[in-house]
Amino acid sequence: MTTVLFRGVALLLVLQVYAVRNCHRGCRCEVESFGLFDSFSLTKVDCSGVGPSASATPIPIPLDTAHLDLSSNAIAAISTSMLSGPGYTTLVSLDLSSNLIVRVGNDAFSRLRYLETLDLSQNALEELTDGCFSGLPLSEVDLSDNRLGELRLSVFSAKGQGRPLSVDLSNNLLTSVTTGPPGNLPNIQSLTLVGNRLQKVPNLRGVALRYLSLDSNPITSIEEDAFWGLGDLVHLSLSSLSELTAIWPGAYHELRSLQVLDLSKNPQLTSLDPEVFSGLVSLQELNLSHSGIDFLPNNIVNHLPSLRSVSLRANVHCWKAYKQGQFHRQLGQAKSDEVLTCDITGIIL
Ligand SMILES: *[C@@H]1O[C@H](CO)[C@@H](O)[C@H](O)[C@H]1NC(C)=O
Image 1 (spheres, rainbow, N blue to C red):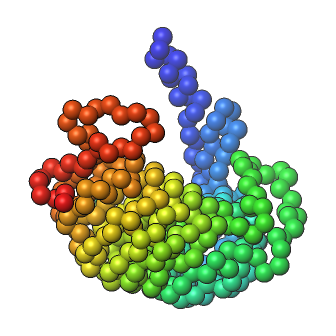
Image 2: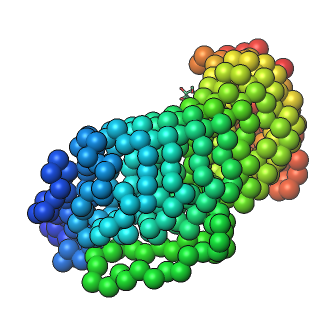
């Protein structure tokens, strides 16, 4: 009986994939439909590796395309005309990774009013024009492996005010329509800036970020309030910062939602004042492996009430435990009976 029921459910949810006719030469177009009576469908167009023809005129794509992959096409500049035309206005995700993009025209993405995911990784971007991401409901942006020396908040904000929403979306197969956040505040939840030329933490004040990675940048120090205004951040990656020598007390004190902090592979980071961790009330995981920090002060737990594990050196793991014989504590009391224990001794000072 259960199996029959299970099969029935599986049948309803089965994903149907079929190819689209009139797909541009060299691209692969697929419609995925799912749900009861195929009530939802998504068109995916993969034009990766089509060649330089991709950058001339817009590649014709089916009218209701949601995902477009233009990666690995030797595209050098993004212009408005390249990303306009039927089918483009409904894009929810766009992959432009592994091209040769040096420049993004400031209106290049302006027609992509439903764009939530943008991948510009592995290009040659040196600078982004103010407003180039404005008015887009972006939630995930990947700018890894470019040559960005800075990222100004103004790339996300409009020059004028929000654009009028005048797109006709009738007779489409859209499964969801998201509008941008009110005002000019970007709604980006995930931002990846790995492998750029940032020398300091960019000011992202007020962005609703939940995930941020600044790995492999030439950042030398992290100042007090560097992450000011990022109270929603859950995961922060600051790994492989080969020039990082100092993190100042108060650097993280706004990050009350942060659960994971990755400080691994920072060999020049040799000491950390426990005050550095003040404010990290939700932090569960701290990664200091392959960093210059080999020992931990025990009072670190006073600042990190939610801490579960710390990784250190090459393969040392520490976790929070209660001092023997003191298993109960009253709610709201200082957790002075909690200590850090590691799988080898001599780590905790
Ligand atoms: C800590 O960082 C190292 C190096 O980046 C990584 O290999 C490891 O998986 C991380 N550990 C945890 C617990 O995330």
